[in-house]
Amino acid sequence: MSTRIDKTFERCRSEKRAALVVYATVGCPSPAESEAVIDRLIANGADMIELGVPFSDPMADGPVIQKAGQLALAAGAKFDDVLAIAGRIRAKYPETPLILFSYYNVLLNRGLDKLGGELAAAGIDGVLAVDLPLEERGELVPVCEKYGIDLIPLVSPATPPERAKRIAAGCGGFIYYITVRGVTGVRTSLPPELAGELEAVRKLLPLPVAAGFGISTPEMAKAVAAHADAVVVGSAMVRHVADADADGAVKLIADIAAALK
Image (spheres, rainbow, N blue to C red):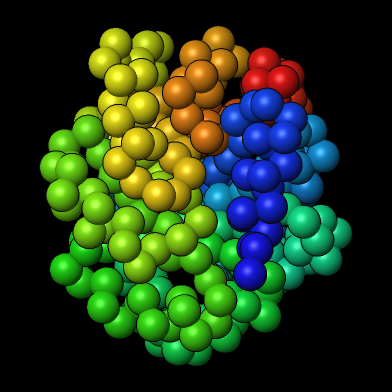
């Protein structure tokens, strides 16, 4: 069965462009304001939204996403807010894929089977557990299959090809390819070897490849899009939201969306 994620990639391919995936920290600077921003991001060109769950110890994230998470937690953002916001966004935008982006502890604490039912009910299409290694995902895979949710894998430049194949097996949606070593954050340039790495991963693995970590300008996004099925923008957009500049966040995404056309 073709999922919302599959259909989005098909549509973008028919338009001869890469998809634009945007990460937003839910609850930053407040739950209501983050929902309003997500709404505007979709209206201004985001093809998919990653719903970042605020977490007290976000070890894969750089200072921008850490700050956004702290603001969200200080504003009282809870996991229930993520589900409620997802449900309302889903009702307004029935075709836009929503992906839960979380640390695994948050999911475990919820109870995986309960979580699967909640995600499906909220209209969430995929889940990405940023700190979940291949060897420890055994409990999450059947839950995702039961509820029709894509488990989205992470692959990096340091992942050997055979391991990348094993990581992709049993997953769906797309491969999130980490473009740079290190934590999330805004970068001024991307590694020169990235184009070749992306092309190699696309040949190696059966799923579409979305490239993320460090993409901060329309020019960078366009350069990466030539070698990927999707471009992920996170910190560069979240930085504006965390600084109470929602208009700046929306303008950045609109400009990147225009560059990808």
